[in-house]
Image 1: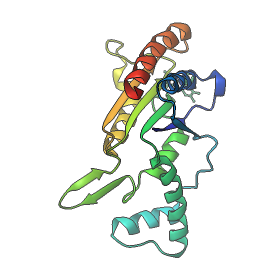
Image 2 (image 1 turned 45 degrees about the vertical axis):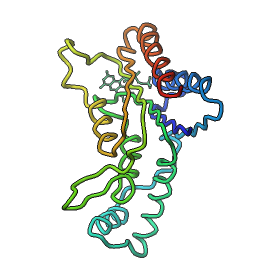
Image 3 (image 1 turned 45 degrees about the horizontal axis):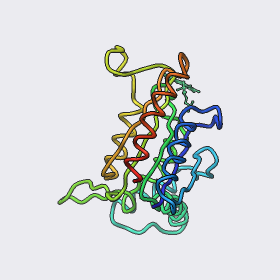
Image 4 (image 1 turned 90 degrees about the horizontal axis):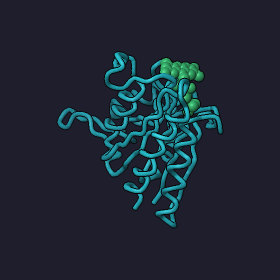
Length: 207
Ligand SMILES: Cc1cc2nc3c(=O)[nH]c(=O)nc-3n(C[C@H](O)[C@H](O)[C@H](O)COP(=O)(O)O)c2cc1C
């Protein structure tokens, strides 16, 4: 089994989401001896600009043509990152909330790997189709405050609905979440509760 661990906090050992993700992975390792974990930190990746050339390539592909010259070079850079992204069975994302949404580096990564002919397809007959239908994910969401039911701030949370929508669009067959919230108020309780959920999921997903 291959796991891609996609770390999206730049805070290293101070990150709550990274800490829970690491514990999830350690638990998974105790269940599966030949578990292969690839660590992708979106802050360390040399992500190419998603600029005019890359966009032209994307629109060429959407129109059913092959990108040429500079566009082709840009597209092959995108394909290389996508191939690494796609090379896993299970995905662990550690995602901090930044201004109610996700950190911009994760959005950059999403913009690169979410491509027609790679992670999704479109045809007038079939509409949109996710192509990553054999994948599962565990997403660990951290936020300084809480946005759960009854807080009155449910609608401020764009982080969880967005990531869930994105993975659903790509066709993921199972998406689990672990919430570590109110980290700015009571990090100890938040970590304890989240760890409980994370370890249970690690057992379910890797046994
Ligand atoms: C740039 C930035 C924006 C943030 N915006 C929010 C926010 O909108 N809502 C919130 O509850 N917490 C916000 N926070 C707090 C983080 O979500 C919180 O510290 C969380 O634990 C970060 O995840 P990490 O510990 O894995 O890095 C923000 C933090 C930063 C650095």
